[in-house]
Image (cartoon, rainbow, N blue to C red; front, side, top):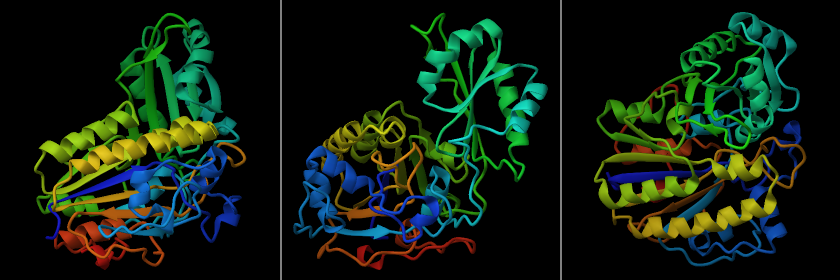
Length: 395
């Protein structure tokens, strides 16, 4: 065991160039990092640059520098699709060959909406891809007046149900989501997650989502590196929405967050104060949810620069026998058409005070090399269904 603690931080959607098969997804030419940097007139990211980011792509504002304690490369995705669950599952060893369904551009099929209305006994409004806070602001008063339910989706494989708990009891909302989960297990729908989104308030001016969100996710289709770690007594600590993505499978400890800043503060606190042995797996969702899907290029760029500052503070808290891996789960080029994710490679930036001779490595063919590297560090053999090869240079 070279490292006692491994921190994997996922900057959700921060891709670094189109996959070889991106044309099949309508994403040939996409590049989240490069295009944001161009629009920004250059990114100020000295921390990421010190880890070798400038070696990976012509990102305006970065440069090639010596980084003896960091190895860098890009990872291609072996799975089909370009969604959150597929990307994260692959990091932990699962290759997805049948993509999850998304209904970003069309809304859910009339047959599904009709069946849900019949089973729920309530009218459905919405049925579009939207921000949760925005759709509650625009349709919340109508939902309260009618006693209906707001259904919406995103670029992910998800059906979200929002209701004001003064008009629809929380227990009923949960029951309705369980019904939706049952229906959406069918092959024609195959949605990754159903999410209950309760809110309170009397008008659009004061509507506010409550902490009673509940996810009904598909479980991973096989064992993951987190299962291997947990079963052998190692910590699997999750920050952000990781626990929901894996439907609690292989998770020892989880902390949900309200922002990326909070996520980084919590992770930094773990680095400073928690002497665990194992994996801390972190998702920072706002790159994707607040900026990528909303095609807010400048906001996305500024958020990258904010992350760079938080990352510097986090790295100051690392111990000599810690390993940091910074990566992403897909792309979401905010200069691209539509509001969907983009089929992109992701960066792999690995840092530890123990490393020497850091350099750029050859591109690798799976996100699963992350999980394989974690397992190899702790002397564990992957389960038979898992893919991926350890990055031997950092072990």
